[in-house]
Length: 86
Picture 1: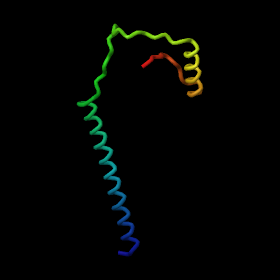
Picture 2: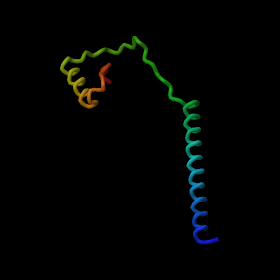
Picture 3: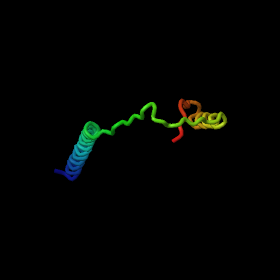
């Protein structure tokens, strides 16, 4: 075999090895993500409707500033649907 043949053979073996290892990483990663989400998923906690939390009114000036900021940052594609104080 010539030197070029050996080089091409090594290139082919290397490319196939890298492809197989990356495919294993993708398959195992997908399996681990699905397994964890299925058995150890995060519980969704819903607050009861009458939890005694006081609703704080927001001034119209603050609401206008929030709407304007969202509109500016999203270039008109965003929309304010709810404003809550945390």
